[in-house]
Length: 339
Image 1 (cartoon, one colour):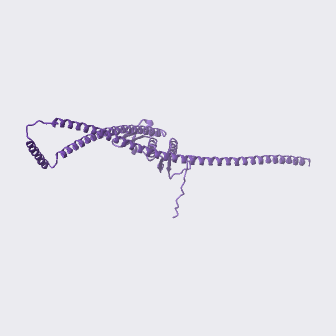
Image 2 (image 1 turned 45 degrees about the vertical axis):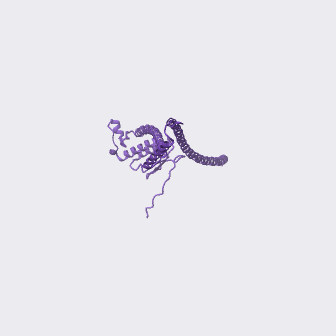
């Protein structure tokens, strides 16, 4: 009996000890639940702030776009006004020059008239003879006017108008020649800038293409012929590259090698040419699991290096893709084969 009493006492002690531990664990669990509720509340607050921040960011982006559009309109209007001001200035200078030439021409005519028709002419002829001579000369002048179909004043006016139009045409041609020289210079500068920009894109694409192929242990090169608008692609696979063999044409590659080379080419071009949206459809259908995993990793790294949005469409399994703050996976429902 004493042995059983000792066992009973030991069991009672264990029960009390376990009861105390259970109470402590319950209190700890209660505190953990309270902390979890507080953490959830804080997370909700943070998510709400993030949503508000994104909304404000979209609003500010919209305002910036509107301001950019208004700026473009104002700049275009300013350029138009500058062109009108230059045109008005040219017309003003032309009018001033024409006025000066007309003034000099009038002064010359006055001087010639003063020389040809002095105030008094000494003559021995009688007034009747002078009158008859005047009538004779007037008759000759009238016959001449009838023969030519215009008076002397009209002829002088037409000559003056023709000279005026000639001078205006000459100045217009000179002005157009100056404008043509400016336009030719601007076009030449733009072509030089475009050539430099195109060379930069070519060099960047070549560097990125070789870099992406080296990630897989391959080697390759791009040859741009801008005059013929042709692109030559050469790729050496890993075993050939290690043996030092020459590069081969992309048409002689296998399906997986060709797909990986095409992805490398697209990524190298996208790194050089900015685009807000980049889409790839069924890019990994000819790849094995190893090449597909390496290609996806390369695309993800390239997507993190720029601000473009990448959209990848694949019939393969996307279970290895882990969603994150910048990665979203949309899985479509399987097709209904019953119908």
